[in-house]
Image (cartoon, rainbow, N blue to C red; front, side, top):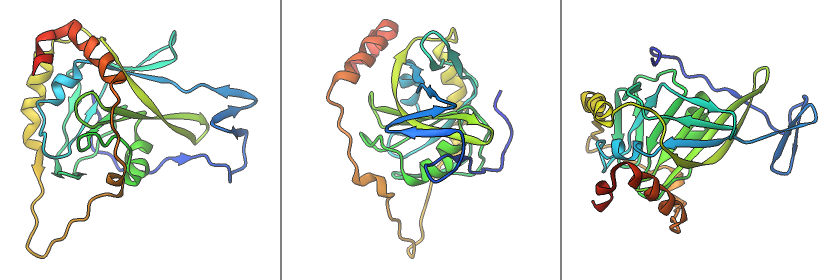
Amino acid sequence: MLGRKRVVAKSKEWSLDEEGPVVLVGGSVYLGGTELIRRRVFLDVRWLRVFRELPSSTEWLMYIGELYEEPTTNAYVIPLTDDVIIPEQEVTSASVDVKDSRDAPVVIHKHPEGLRSFSGIDREYVNQNHTVSIIWAGGFSLHASVRERIDGGVFWVYEADVEPALYGDVEIEDVLEVIREQLGNIKEKTYTVQSVYYPSEYYAYYYRDEGGEEKEWRKKLAEEEGEWLED
């Protein structure tokens, strides 16, 4: 199960300015002469149904306590599971402020429709503290950041596409029940007359799905509950 409240600390991310046995060549990373392979990220497609239970007009964040390694495909797999926590958080349409951070392998948070790029705050404080961090930007638009420990306290953090899968034997209604019990932890932030809110810088970047990824997600989802696709 997910851990208790933790103190958020930034992990060390290696760069070209540091000495060590890690060498960066182009977009590839080598450790001791061996190229490190970027992992693929698979997410059980039924999570898309779960996400629709959460607020659609604001951001939100959730933690998932299960993550598996799939050696044959060198992938991380996030199954459908009821090991999920929605922490206390204050949200707006463009931000989420978590009051009760948790130690979990997977974190997922919502961005406005179509905006699936990580912000500077995401990279600094969210992606650095979880093995897999995923943005859901509505519909079939998802994007991941993966953190790998490669040498002592050195971490390799890179981004990856999220691919659809069907993994796990938990009933979706059981997951939805757990989610509904925690919806009260998401509270919309209110401002006084003097308050001014400035959206995060990443909203200058707009991502439009060209249809290829969406087609693959719809195909997988139809295997489970084709009628939901008609919504």
